[in-house]
Image 1 (cartoon, rainbow over the protein chains, first blue to last red):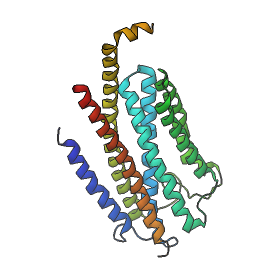
Image 2 (cartoon, rainbow over the protein chains, first blue to last red; image 1 turned 90 degrees about the vertical axis):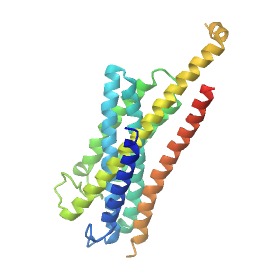
Image 3 (tube, each protein chain N blue to C red; image 1 turned 45 degrees about the vertical axis):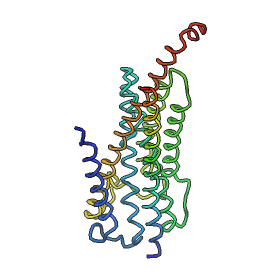
Length: 235
Length: 41
């Protein structure tokens, strides 16, 4: 059990390297005819978006569970998945414009997919700000309610290109479009690699948050023991 | 081939963002470790 985490780190590193090789090499995925090499941004952009959505759904499940059971482990899981989800969503928002510039001729357009993704990111950033700066005892409850609102936006972001006329291409899955099987294979390998990476980051962050709460409790206990008179005078 | 700088920029940006986040986790972890050591004294 002691070596499980380092072993998983090594395996994930190998998987990420293989996924990058497959994404960049013509031996892995064929070069798209219209866009050329720049289309290979797709193998980082799309799996990052899927991983972010997956993390936001786990955040939803943990938040709902926290609201029902008031379980602190669920609260930590919600915080961690939101934080790592925001990192992956940031990758989506950065790689998207870098891909758009040579293909569309612009960095950004206020179309529904791009704007809704930005709004989703802002919702989860505000969730993290709420958790960081609010000192109220009700913070986890408020954050859980905000997380439910954020997760409701995820299907809207994904399917926005069905409901609105946008510049963004149709979704790879369930969009009715076709994709070369070799491209799909490389896309799924990259998604698997990023999901494993996200799992390990969440694991580390979970342990860190648990330790942080234990230290906070220990500090609170110590200040109570060091200054019992001060605590009585505040009553 | 003229688009290759964009490809490089996108892949580099992805890993810069992830490494920056991992660095914040490691810094928070070392700060906490110091706090734990102080509490143990």
